[in-house]
Length: 444
Image: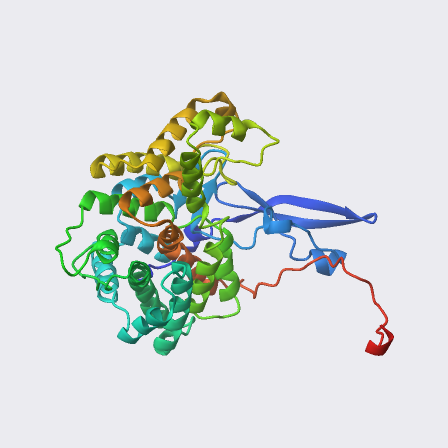
């Protein structure tokens, strides 16, 4: 087994607080226990609310609702902190590979040398996809969005691997995890090759994770292609910072679908579809589209900066500020340095990237943005990095999905290992018609 022994004293650090929360409703008082996490965050356990008080909470978008307990990722938006299994994101990006971080997220601990060697070798050896899966690409339109290919083929993998769909069999889960991590870049690369009309390139087991992505995307059969290790390293850093971010839209989707005991391929495919949305995985695409708009206008940045400050103007600077972080996004700090390193290495002279760098400089010095903590976020810099590397905009959410895959798997696995998991079934407040009398068609 790859999964290290569980230490309940460490992994279940949440405690029941001595405090109780009181609710007054129609002159009746109800008390609910307060749960405290390992970092001091508080939650009110309202599971008995409906049965005792006959009421539910209403929280549109679940912005203040804790759907689960999790030991995977800690985010503190006020202090700009992101940790995977207790390890700061800064340390992981500096010292770890993407595969090592994937192991950490999924299995809870950094791997030992033997564990890492086995895991890394297994992922490399599962990178090919069945030859007949290529036929799917042949019948789909060339200009189709690669996220549609990604979600469809991930779901279809369940038809090829019916021997490993049992979520309660550790060995079946393990091999499915390896297959997903190995095959998603291949599936993504084939979608890109389809869009540009080039032959599909097989993965090379001797290459690292980021190297293989670049090789499959940009190599052609007629020429030698040498992967730049520094660029591959920057790509892996971009994948690492996207690997997990607690209960976001796509991760919550994976857990919700999995809570019905859906197999891991179906659950991950659902996560891909949730990530496709422009408010989630498409945010860095919106950054590039904004830069294109500014460039085509040709009027300089001042006009757009002024428009962004005008509360009556619908224009917004994309890639600035974050729903969670009221401080500088720690992921943006990492990718900022990586983006400048990539641009210098590649010597790219792209007017959109030049606008982005100028916009970054202006916003970091302008009191309007600084006072409102509207710092460039991870989407701003990831869009710059991907564009500089040569990825088309449509591939941005695909790369996000490859990066987020370990987090999705980790949450799916954690959910199945928890004794408290129940099928997700949110409640609602009905605000439609009261009971009405049915009238036959001839009387309407």
